[in-house]
Image (tube, rainbow, N blue to C red):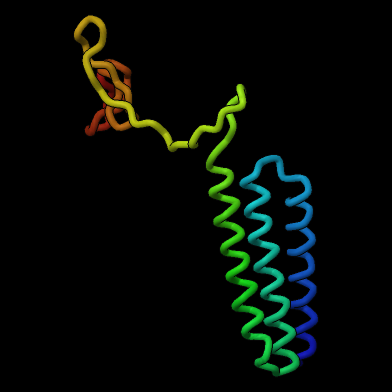
Length: 134
């Protein structure tokens, strides 16, 4: 019974590793490749754990810990590298998150909606009673 579970687990891990390698090869963005690298490292840790469980050996636990740390440090390094992208003119800039916008007076003093939480007056959105604003 244990051998059958090991064979099924190994087959599933092999499929996961194959799909991760395909995503590393084809992934259009650095983020796709980073996630695929994480998946491949996790699959490798899982395969070593399955082998350790089938053979009932505990000597591979330090290998699992080191491989997990290498995968984590590699992912963090790639993420920090991907956070700095070169501009079209060659200078590096720090990637930032979405810029918050605020609601303030427009050119003629009327309120201008700049965020999703506060729609522009008269935009036809539903009010709290379910009716339409005019």
